[in-house]
Image (cartoon, rainbow, N blue to C red; front, side, top):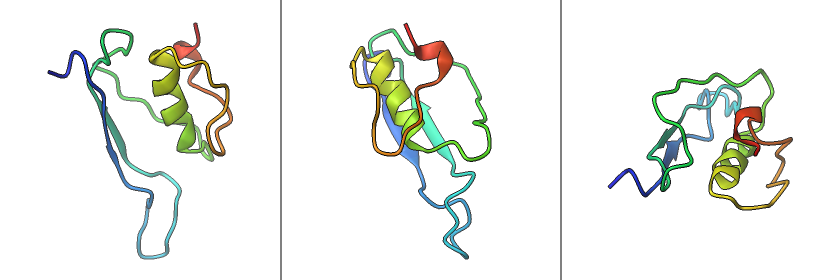
Length: 80
């Protein structure tokens, strides 16, 4: 089933005690029909918006949007 789907699971809070939105955990599972690579662990640079991950998934799904929310761009390896 995960060959043709993408499941996004995460939290908008890195530290809920202080409502900190830095270093938020995010899990992406599935291959989305083939274009999404698997078996990766990535750590985004400090200050990277969470919307970049969503934009990367959209780019892998061949959605042509260049921006999503406060995104600053997709992961370089997803740009085709």
